[in-house]
Image 1 (cartoon, one colour):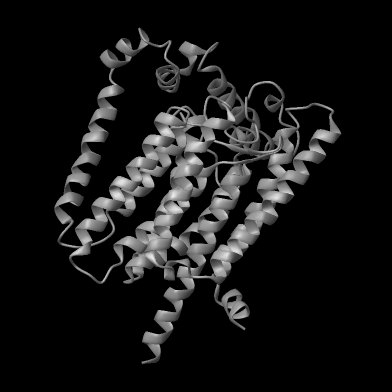
Image 2 (cartoon, rainbow, N blue to C red):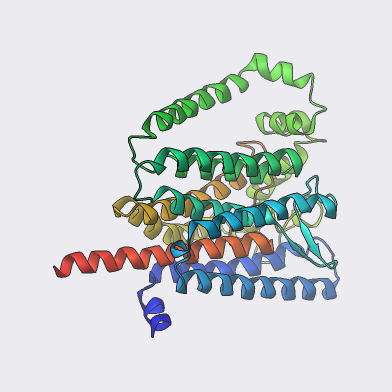
Length: 389
């Protein structure tokens, strides 16, 4: 009865969008992976089996969060979960480097788990649990403890795992959810954080200035600096860091309005290091055109609009933090990916959630959507209750 009631009350727009994006993403991953092993049908069948496995696993995670309110668990269990993920992040170093980062735990030779993806989901839930306290004297303590716990994760992911993209996403998520609570005890620190945003924007503009760019060119042998310079002007580095960005732009132009047709992308065969992950967007636009891209954006908006709309209306702090956290989680991934492959910002290796390949990211984002659906149901129930009075 409870399960049937949850399914009935779940936001239909979000549910429909999830189904469409799962099908669309799986089809585009199969198409993009054609470029990795040309003519190897056994490899494509392996890709399909892996994708179906991740979809099934992600769906199970989604319903687990939809049918259960994990925010009812005691805070001590969250601390245990924090330590568990912390150990997993540290253990990744034992499994070797993949694509410049030590970010994965391997099960055999084919299945990998990326703990940093689950850290993003966990830190949203942890914020909702820690900040929604009835004890006024705990507000500042919890705020500081959360900041320290987030910083530990971010330092490990960036400095120890060498995964810049995940560290940036996690930092933005944690930073934003810390601004949500409206407690007088922490307002001073939140004001400092807002000033920090202004300072960060000013520094970004300074870095983009010609004198700083010229200085960085002298140190362009550094990998991260090279990515930044390539984003500023990829054509100056067309045989180095800017090559993939240029090919991405060529794919956008090649796709035109309606694209070359599904499976017909040319550049996925030779010009992208990860056509089904970091560079899946150029493959989408080349095959489906601007029309296909706009359609994808509309479905993405259909999924996220009820989440952000309810987050702005609800007066329940836990619900607000979860919904805003999930919304930011998806938006940051989208902006970093689209901005990176289009040359607007440096490449960070961040996937488009629900579309790019990656079992851990798919399971984590479906878990986030299940958690958001649970809060949407609670929000709807509270509105119905207040209207019945």
